[in-house]
Image (cartoon, rainbow, N blue to C red; front, side):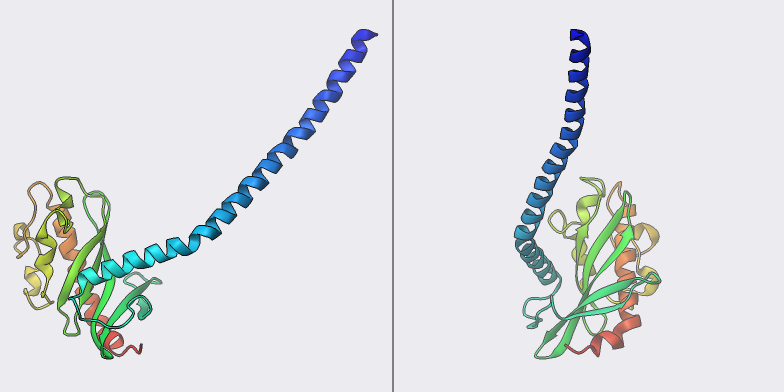
Length: 214
């Protein structure tokens, strides 16, 4: 008799625990979710401000000082991208209302992944500046494309589709004019291709960019 009561009590206790645990887990999940939502809302504005500041600083690196007096973050033109169905954002630089440059992202695959660049082009189609935004190239070899490690990326300044000649838009190892890095030819080769592609893109959309209204 005593044994049966003990068994019944144990089953009731187990049922209570089985019901209690999902409720406890649900409560914890609710509290955690609410905390994450509040934290996300609280940090959204500062994060957006920090991202805007970083973008502004990066845009300033590829444009000559004093070449723009407009808000580059707001003066944005959206055009078809190089891939069907994609779009590309163009930051339009202006001074006294006149277009002085266009800034946009380009990318090519390097040795170990995508190399993403930001480049600026003047209305005549000459490169104003190029900077690396993101890459996963080999440290000590491929990372020489970064301005902080090597001035090589500035070799594109003032270049255009005709200067150098189209067949010279390559690294010296391939008969072009641009230096490559010992042990890392693929990386500069990809950057040259990306910048050349950016100039081709600007030439194809030049009228739309220069005619864009603020």
